[in-house]
Amino acid sequence: MSVSGESRPSTSSDYVGANAHAFGPGRHLRSRSKVLPEHARGHNRALVLQTLYHSGAMSRADLSRETGLTRVTISDLVAEFIADGIVIEMGVRETVGPGKPPILIDIDRVGHQIIGLDLSGPHAFVGALLSLDGDVLERREVPRPESADGDAAYAATLELARALADTATQPILGVGIGTPGVVRPDGVVLSSPNLGWSNLPLEAKLGIELDLPVLVRNDANAAVLAEYTFGEAKADFMLIKIGRGVGAGVITGSQPLLGSRFAAGEIGHVVVGTDGGPRCACGKDGCLEAWLTETRLRPEIDAAPGSRDEILRDAGTRMAIAIAPIVAALDLSEVVLSGPGDLLDGVFVDAAVETLHARTLEGVFEDALIRRTLQEDIVLRGAAVMVLSSQLGVS
Figure (tube, rainbow, N blue to C red):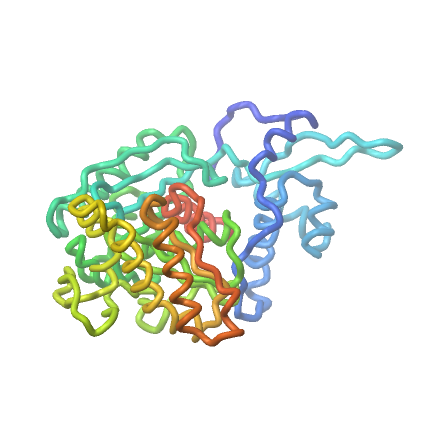
């Protein structure tokens, strides 16, 4: 990776502004595996970059104290990062007293950019060029194919990615994509009925076409990473994303839950109740997705505005019926909703909380929360986290 020759901050007053987007304290995903000697260097690289990313500019000595790594190890790694254009020297820190003032270093937050794509919208595929801090720099969108035409959906995705690549002003660190459906860890979309995809090697195919690192994950699994990294979520929670479809991402013990079929969180096609219900795109009646999607709720409310509260109360109740066993089985602290605020706030969430507490053990789950995330562009920001994690070991 390389970095352009644009001017960098070089004084102590300059580096303060450069730290404006440093996150603290770090919220890294917990590893379940023991660090073996042959993996130690990779672990140390990720630890150093994770610390700088979340804490901001610091000296090499500060970094050694913060990470517990020796100064020799820190010096070697920082030299490597500077040569790769990942880390830059920010100038010296003002000190009082004798001795040479330390040189501050930080992630080069403007030296690379990330492309994020969200394929879950009801009417369009949305993409953005993002900074390493998850800030949207440029935004583009293309119309969503009207039918579940897999070839048309792929062509629209490629068009959007190329359009964003053309806007980049720095080297692109990678492309992150959140898509509806079941996605394997290697980026193969096993099933996405709404897009007409089955066993599509989207990650590998786009990687070749774009000549860039590409990461593909389920859209709700991307969103849950954004809420964990940038938001206020706890170590055990579920994020439910409601839009054209309904999906969920789960983090438990600070670790994403994927499942043996890579379908953890696929709650959209769980049938809620025994009273039938609307016909779902999958062919069954009464799936949670058929009750909850934005494309179902808005037309129903528009057709009967006087029944708005009743419609939303029923939808919130149905959602809670579906998630109550999950909350109890995994002992989750909270459920975070991502979707349109005018539908999910108020009556909807009140009914969901009431039903969740009524259907879980009294005195144990009374503090389980249901709230809506305040993050905008949550899938796009989650796509950025995917790239940062894959390329730099930062989460």
